[in-house]
Length: 247
Image 1 (spheres, rainbow, N blue to C red):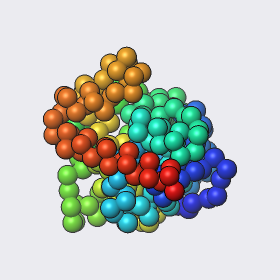
Image 2: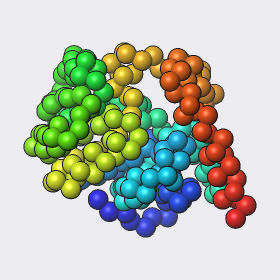
Image 3: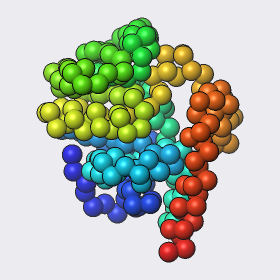
């Protein structure tokens, strides 16, 4: 994976953000699949930006990613404040669903890693039922470490999938993808956070009107109170962006 200088790439708090829409994301991903090259797409939002400020390893992985796309109202606001550009957020869940539909039409190989074992199994069952054209190479939960981590990396490489979706949460999923690429993986690789839970029907997604108001983060916090401490960090992101704007 390598970072390339592009006119459609800017920085927010020292991290790259590509000014792309969903159609271009899909097109670039398919190009990588057809060329059989490793391609890491990272969704960036306010909370992941803060995590990267505190974690240089995560920041380095984001900087080295092939494509970093805006996911969330916070990063869209920051792009407008810092660069005067208006883009639409691309929710990772939506992008994953669209790529799965493409995989169904084109008969692509898909590998799934993340969530609990129950969620991973349900995710695999739903993909097989809804998208019979997908060639599912494997599905496993993401709660592992040590030898389990190494085994999951090896399995992802050996699957020789066209698409690798990793649902482990910010930081952990990016590290897993880095290790897969370093071990010889040649997939289009995406970290998708809690998207398996949504796709499997374990977690209800915000209604379209809430998403239209860019309040999906608030809906998730109200339905999952464990997320509230993370949400309370958002004012720090606002302060960091305003400070960067003044500079």
